[in-house]
Length: 141
Image (spheres, rainbow, N blue to C red):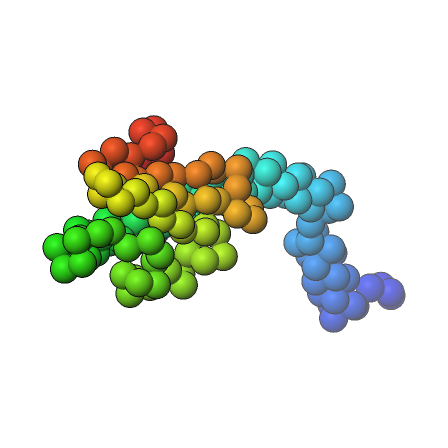
């Protein structure tokens, strides 16, 4: 008489199939290493794009301030010395840049400076003057 029954043999084959379907530790470690390498490459690129986005945002605000300065000059015959006097909102960039205005009465001139702070500090400062000169030129595109 045979000791192996059909249900026992079927159960044994199903058990063997379950074992062969899993991942080995080495396969799992290879996947983790690949993900680590991709993350190490992608994260700095992502950070650069975030800095560029913040820079573009403050540049738009600086352009808006310059436009408001020209309107202010027509009304008051001088340029405004502060951003609040122009009623331009800067709250979206306050965490990354401090915006100041330097003015001169005769002849009337101004220079808008966005000083980078916090994690944006490595990006550098931006300036825009009354003639539309933007510095540093490589940061304005």
